[in-house]
Amino acid sequence: MSQLKAFPKGFLWGGATAANQCEGAYDADGRGLANVDVVPIGEDREAIITGKKKMFDFEEGYFYPAKKSIDMYHHFKEDIALFGEMGFKTYRLSIGWTRIFPKGDELEPNEAGLQFYEDLFKECHKHGIEPLVTITHFDCPMHLIKEYGGWRNRKMLVFYERLCRTLFTRFKGLVKYWLTFNEINMILHAPFMGAGLYFEAGENQDLVKYQAAHHELVASAIATKLAHEIDPENKVGCMLAAGQYYPNTCHPRDVWEGLQEDRENYFFIDVQSRGEYPNYAKKKWEKLGLELEMTEEDLTLLKKHTVDFISFSYYSSRVASGEPDVKDKTQGNIFASIKNPYLDASEWGWQIDPLGLRITLNTIWDRYQKPMFIVENGLGAVDQPDENGYVEDDYRIDYLREHIKAMNDAINIDGVDLMGYTTWGCIDLVSAGTGEMKKRYGFIYVDRDNQGNGTLRRSKKKSFDWYKRVIASNGTEL
Ligand code: BG6
Image: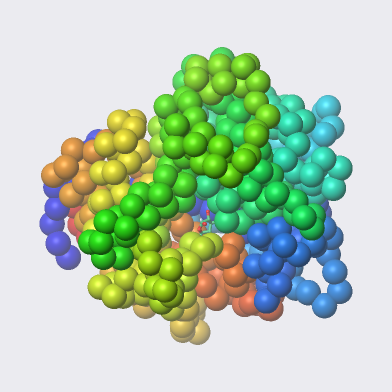
């Protein structure tokens, strides 16, 4: 155990989940079908989440893990009590859009869905936990995809605004931290999951993706505007799948490539935080011959309603090369990167780089100077529980310890402004990338396997007590 300087007073320690990866109960109490329900485990998953293979409904011969997931819908009291026992200050969760608007384009919300989240937020407060709510975490009603083509369609602005207004009004006083879109940059890499985009043959995919991105960015600005109008206490953040690109060598060509790759991600946050499209993006569209449809009013909304803070997920740094022959790649969050020979990797090939977190924090801080929030970080690993469901997960503790130290350095040595830290999958849940259950991130083990077998019993891992101590000591006892 090492001693460190404390984190800032009021630092928001906690954990994070997403509705479709933990709630299950996909058709309970009027919930409608969403894109995230129809992505099966197995070899077709990647083609489906990237919009290359069409899967608009459940099909024979596939297993859909999100249907039941870890059934948090029926276990949330027990789960939140465990988060409370660990001392969570905050719990990041997302709204299942189709629980509130089952088809997405209704005028009136589904009361049962609203009641579910109201009960859940009240349960959080009962345990002294502040909810941090992602409005959409890879979540789009299937009806909106079938009828309107998902986020390619401008009408999505109206449906999303209605969702936001409903949430901000109903949960005023219960929720004050909101994130508009999870990992908004994933629209470029997993367009069906990120934005309900399925591509027809011959379509200009770049045009569709950037047009959909424009709609999401404007929707995010509208949400920020509304959130502030409805309750000035509300704080709204954007959310980026972050991870600094390193050049593969010091050849200027590789450094240039790294800059380009970083820009592809920062593009979204440049708009959400600075309020306008960066010149490099406009030049890129020009070069690609993309003419996006956007109105003056859109640009004014973007300019006027920028986010209050910047949240991001961090699992690993990435590597870029301007040399086309460099082919040694490794897996990462949704998309692969060139392998970094200096780093170890998880069982899924995601490379482990705590210093990369400090580098990423400093880069984002230097670029935007807005408070930051790390809303995902963690190690996906295979756990071996004993007969009581106890797991000696020292590998997870090691991973988190090193990343927390890096955060501490960034705050106490470098002076970045970090509001909080929510580890990903604080309770085991379904993997977004692979659909597996065996890729576990949690402090709490859930008895369920890749095929859906198991009792769903919850049990504490070794990391449970460790994280409890980390929080109780405000990050000084690691
Ligand atoms: C992020 C997502 O991409 O990474 C989460 O916001 C996801 O939904 C997490 O679960 C970890 O990825 P994976 O593929 O291991 O579940």
